Amino acid sequence: MPLITDYHQVKDIYREAAERRVGLPVFCAEDRETLEAILAAALELGREMGVDDLPIIPAWTVRYPGRGQMTLLTACGDPRLGTRLMFSDLHAFMSEDSPYRHLRVLPHLDHGFPWLDGDIMEAYAGQFASIMCDASEKPFEENMRLTAAFVDKVRGQVVVEGAVDEIFEAGGAGSKNEPTSVAQARRFLSETGVDIIVPNVGTEHRATADQIVYQSERAREISAAVGSILCLHGTSSVKPEDLPRLPADGFVKINVYTTLAVHGGQAVARQVLQSLPGIFGETQLRELVSAGWLPETVLAGQARPRLNIVANPPRRDAWFGAVRQRCIDFLRAFNYAAYAR
Image (cartoon, rainbow, N blue to C red; front, side, top):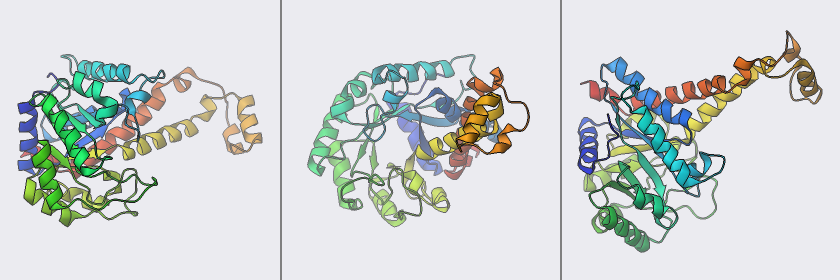
C-alpha cells in the first residue's frame, strides 16, 4: 500500500480513531532500525488481532533545536539528505515484496519551526500525512500568525498540527508556562485553521512521571470545547496508569520518542556487555580490567574478536527488538484493540 498522504484520507483515519476511542501514537525515529521497529510493532500486533492494515505514524523532526533528528540520521548531518533517506526507506518498506505493505502508514513531520524548516515543510507538504507547525516559542499572537500563514500555504495538501502553548523542556532554562485554557484553545483553532491542536496540560518533554502531574480534567474540558482533535507531547512524563485514559480525554494523536531511545540504547548496552569476549582480544580485555573499566570475570574463557559479534547486526537486532516491544506496549495502552471490533 502506498503511504497515506491524501488530506481527506488522513482526516478519515483520525476521525475513525476518535470514534473508536483510539489514540494514534506518533513514534519518532532518527535511524532505519527505529523506523522498521515502528512498522514491525503494528505488523505483529495486527497479526495477533487478525487485522493487517492497522494505521501507524512514523515521524521525525528536521532541525528542531530540541533534537533535530534529520541532522542526526547521517554522519554528514545534512537534514535535506536525511529527509530524502527517510522517505526512501519508507517507500521501500511499503513496496509489494515487503511484509509491511498492508499497513496504513502516515508519515509525520514533528516540531517544524517555519523559520528553520520552512523549506522542508513546504517542499514535502504533499509527501507527509501531517506536519506540526510549531511556533509555540513565540508570543501567542505571533504564534497564531505564523501558524495561520503556513496553513494558508498548504491548505488541503496536508493535515496541520499547531501548538497552542510551548511544552516545557525538562531541565531547560526559563519559567514554566501555564496550562492551556479552553478560551485559548478555541481562539487558536479558530484563528489558525489547524486540524489538530497541542495544548499544554502539564506534561514535559523528556521528563519522568514522578516529576509532573498530567492534568486530565483540563484536557477533557478542552476536548469538550473543540472536539477529539488533541495531540499530546511529553508522553514520557505521563504515569503508566494514566496512559489508557488519554484517548478518552480527547487525545487522538500522542507523541512518543524518549522512551524508545532509552529502551533501545539500554538493550544495545546489555548486548555489548554480554558479548565483550567476542569483541576484544585477551590483551585488550586485560587492559580494560587493569584500568578498572571491567571486572576480572570477563577474562574467563577464550577472548577473541568474532565477526558475527563485532559486526553491526547483533546491536541492530537488540535495538530493534527493544523498540518494537516498547511500541507494542503503547499500541496496547492506546486502545488499538478497538480495531479488532
